[in-house]
Length: 500
Image (cartoon, rainbow, N blue to C red; front, side, top):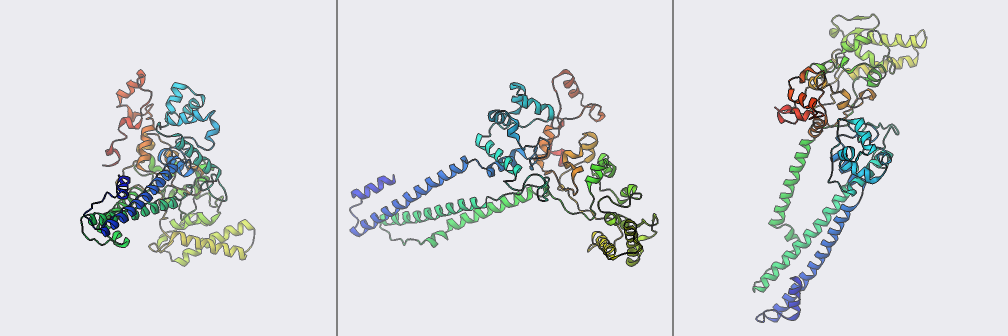
């Protein structure tokens, strides 16, 4: 159409009633508009080609997005540790062909039961009854990008290196790279197009007015950009952005995967749950019988540490904090009466004497040397800094541990229902806690993560009186109609189960 108009102008197809000056003005406006629109066409073509190139490009960044959306709920993002699914480091090496690997990713059940591929059957036997979700719509480029991201995280070329490298634990979250430059570039191109279109619209308005014999002053670029339409669009954009930000932040409320604060006492699960094999529920005894797993009281610690007074890693430094918090004198093996009322200096003397005596025993010295005095001072300062704060002025009193796992108030979760009835292992949600010197939040604890678990987790009917009432499912399993019953089958996806 524009070409037709321009050709009409060139051929002189303009209203003859207009003056020569008006005709020249119209011709100039037509030519200017035509040039502007040709530039706009060119930029549009470039933008479209640029967009297609971005979509078609295989990249680790694109793979990260796919992994986050489809894989992260079951596979550990450090790539080297198992989770609900196996560690993904070296996944390509474990398959005979790329074609079979891609087919497995798109439909694992078909590879197991229809094709009978040996690697697929091996994985099924290892992880059943948990089945991998089918992703039939993933393109080859998306799968290739995901594998590129996995390899990058594994060998350390993308984000933080996998494994314990330079003091970085493999359990810590992968460092995220930013795509801000890409979004900035796209925003700049769109802003340029917007300015060009604004200028073209202004020229069209002048042209239309000239054709009707009216005189209209052509708007400057500043006037065009501050017009009601542009201002309204900007306000609309700000409202959308504010809404998106609010919803995103609300969705992420309480999600702190990888959160690993330093606690007032350096309690190592590696020493207790790992090396010494202490059962989780010995300390967190609420997990089997109540909603909360509970933080163990210092009295629980004293069941062992009334006898074990020197720690294997920190000596007296950390254990003395427990003694000071509950008024136990390790030198006399007695609890102090009315310990909360003892003056700070007197209290200090009790525990610094204990620390000093232990140092003399270990070194064989008759009296404290300079190093011993420094150790006594350092450990007492550590006791004070760990057991006091702005609200708690005295060393005596409960240890204020820092909470790590924290669900929103509108979410109901019952430990006993999962641990005792569902017979879920602590590690299924909390990761390999026995390998954590400092505890961190292993799982995202998001709604999607919980729902995926309910869809995949098989209910343990055998020798579990709680599920005897589900006679229909028992009959279906015995008849072969069902080979398993998941949590979703017994109402695990109902909103009221977690929100009521």
